[in-house]
Amino acid sequence: MSKQYYQPEIECASRQQIRAWQSERLVETVHRVYRDVPYYRDLMDKKGVKPEDIKSVDDLHKLPFLTKDDLREAYPYGLLAKPLSECVRIQSTSGTTGRRVVAFYTQHDIDLWEECCARALVAVGAGKEDVVQVAYGYGLFTGGPGLNGGSHKVGCLTLPMSSGNTERQLQFMTDLGATVLCCTPSYAAYLAESIHERGLRDRIKLKAGIFGAEAWSEEMRRDIQEQLGIKAYDIYGLTEISGPGVSFECEEQTGMHINEDHFIAEIIDPVTGEVLPEGSKGELVFTSITKEAFPLLRYRTRDICVLSTKPCSCGRTHVKMSKPMGRSDDMLIVKGVNVFPSQIEAVLMNKGYPANYQILVTRERNNDKLEVQVEMTSEMFSDTLGHISAREKELVEALKAMLGIYVEVKLVAPKSITRSEGKAVRVIDTRKLY
Ligand code: DLL
Image 1 (cartoon, rainbow, N blue to C red):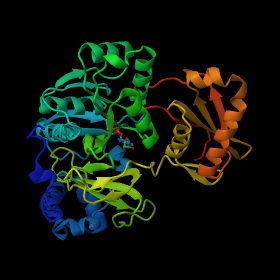
Image 2: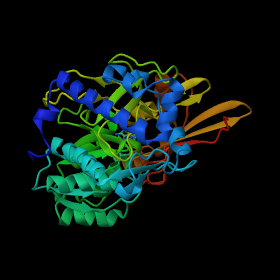
Image 3: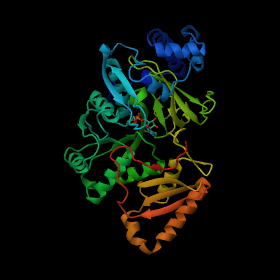
Image 4: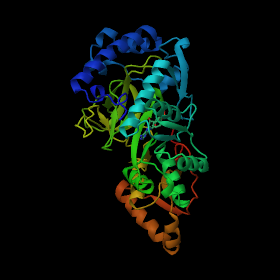
C-alpha cells in the first residue's frame, strides 16, 4: 500500500479524535465564511446565528442549510471565500436545467480533492505498479480530473482516456494492461459487454474498478464483477463538495467511508429538516471544513442514504454511508406511489436482464402510466422469440410485488436502447407536474 495515501493515524483515528478535528475545523470555517462571504453572513443573520454560537460539532444544527437554489442565486461568484486571484480551477455539475452550479478551487483545494481520490484508489489495492484507466469524462465534470489527480498522487501509470470511443478504450486496456478501471457503472457494463462480444476477456488484466457518479444496484455490481473478473467498488461525491472521493468503498464493499477529516456528514428528514439519529434513512447533508475557495456549510445533497459507524473489517473508523437509495428530488410519484428507479433496476437485474433499460412515465387523461423498456440479452432474444409475452408477464408481476403498482413492460431487442458514455438517462418523465 502507498503509505502516503493510507494514513492509519487519520483514517483509523478514534471517533473522539475525529470529532475533535471536526469541531476545531468547523469553528474556524464558520468564522471565516461569516467574515469573508456576505451571502453566508446574510443567511446566518437571518437565522439569528453568530459565529460565536458554533463551539463544536454539537452546534452544527444551529446553522442554516444551503441548497442548490442558493448556489444558483449566488452564481457565479457569490459564495467565493477567497479572492479570485487565489483560485486556479472551476468544475461544474452535469445538470442541464437552470443555471449551472460552478465550484471553485485553490491549489490547496485541488490537492485535498486529489488526496481523497488517492485514498479511494489505495483502498482498492492500487499502488505504483498499477495502470489506471480513467474513463470518466474530463473537462467540467469532476470524474475524470479527480481520479486522474488521485492516480498521479499514488504514482500509478494513468491513462487519461475520458469517456467514449469504446474501440480505443479496449485497445489501450489490452495493449497497456490496465489493472484498474474508473468510469460510471453504466459505462463499465457497456465495456464489459463489448469485451465479451469481442472475445477479449483473456486479454484484459483488470483487477478492480472504481465506479460511481450514478446509482447502481448490488445486482449490477455482481454482474460487472462476474463479467470482468474484477472487484467493483463504489465511489461517491458531488461537484459542490469537491467531486469524487467524498467517500469511497474499502475491500469490505459494504458502504463508503466518508473522508471525515474534511467533511462532516448529517442525515436529516428531507421534509422537516430535523437531524436524524445514526441508522436512520434520510437526506445526506455535508459541511466541508478544510476547503478554501468554496466551503459549503450544511449543503443538502438530496441523496437519500443511511450512515453507520459500525466497526469495519478494514480498520477505518470514518463513518460509512450506504449506497444512495435515490434522491429526495428524483423519486417518482406514480399513481400516488413513491417509486425509486433503483428498485426497478434491482428487479430487472435479479431476473437476469442487462442494465440497459429506460423508465417512461406518461400521463393520459389524468392517469399515470409507468412503462419500463428492457433490453434482452442476445441469448434471451434468440431463445424466447415465441415467449416474449411470458417473460414480460413475469416482469410485470415481479415489479408489482416490489412497487405495489402495475408497470407496463416492453422487452426490446439487444442494443436498441441508446448506450451512455457518461451518466445513463434512465427516466423519461413527460408528465407536466408543476
Ligand atoms: O457525479 C462526482 C463523481 C464523479 C462521483 C465520479 C463519483 C465518481 P455531480 O455530477 O455533481 O458529481 O453529481 C453528484 O451524483 O449528488 C448523487 O446523486 C450522484 N452520485 C454520485 N456518486 C454516486 C454513487 C459527480 N456512487 C450526484 N452512487 C450526487 C449513486 C451517485 N449516486
